[in-house]
Length: 504
Image (cartoon, rainbow, N blue to C red; front, side):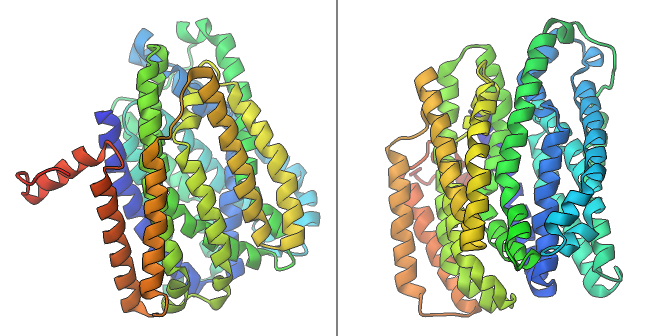
């Protein structure tokens, strides 16, 4: 667990640094861009790009995660054709996606031309964005296996936001002459990240491109094909379900991209709650894959339970902090007041994120096990619930509807996966500290609201946030809610020269 803990902590620091930078970007976007422009960039590009990535990624990420130990243990580095095959299949599939996008553009015009004309105008610029995301994600999965998850966390969570910050500042300074130039520059940000990661892996000797079919590929060909097909389908279903909300809002809600912008702001703020999830998942994939190979169920249970409580602690704390500051933050920091309508959306999405994170690394456990086919089955269930419910609630309730739909569907989705792991392997992530964490969060929220709800302004934002953080962190440490608290606290004490202080 020490490797996972160390990489997770480093990655989480990078992630939160990236999210702090993202907060600056969000502030600049919220003050400088109209809601429909913000909706196009952070709603449509992200949502459609991720769906295109899922379609163009033929199970490559799962293929790398599942079979890397076999390639690594049985082949010399220069004969390892794992990453070459993953990249090749992804490029071929993306070419087919591009062709499909051209063929179906008239349908896009009919569905979105009235409410969201800007989507149609910049439609083809989503393609380079999605290509970069596809290539980066495949390389990222490979980097996780060679223990470079810190580098990928830096690139995805921090460097990408640096690119965004540079672009928005150049727009405000007039170097980028208009919003159209900004969008076209933004479309290439993930391609640049993919190029950086490619050359990093190559320079470290981790990347060897070969198109000779190895004996491992020949031996596992049928299993690889079955894995890629089902996980590909499952990923498409999951991403379509996860990112469908912004698309259906753009098509159905009369305000179009303006409504998408309000939803996207609330969703992006809620993403702070989910910040450590990707870092923990990245650090856990390699050890989980190895543990399944070694049939070490005990280690899998430890990873499962620790990932759950650590993510619950992060998510509940961030939810409380943001919920107490949302309205004051919008007004004090000069956002357009249209974004105040995002508070109920944030609260609902925030609860969804807590549910998703509280179930730990269940996705990673399933995709690295022999029951990876269940990823497809659960994805089918999720999509079957998500698409009709999002559509119906969007028509009936407007922009709040998809948030409610996601809370319902992702709760059911995670419950099904949790029940499957418990019945099949007797694995479950929860313990009494999960309940204590929820109670601590509720108590912290009540205290923060009672003390500060009448006050508004920058100084009160600082005071409210400081009080909430101190109270919540003190509760986490004193209650010893996670087994990782002690080692982390010892590290902090050493860095601060307090090594003689008693560990809580």
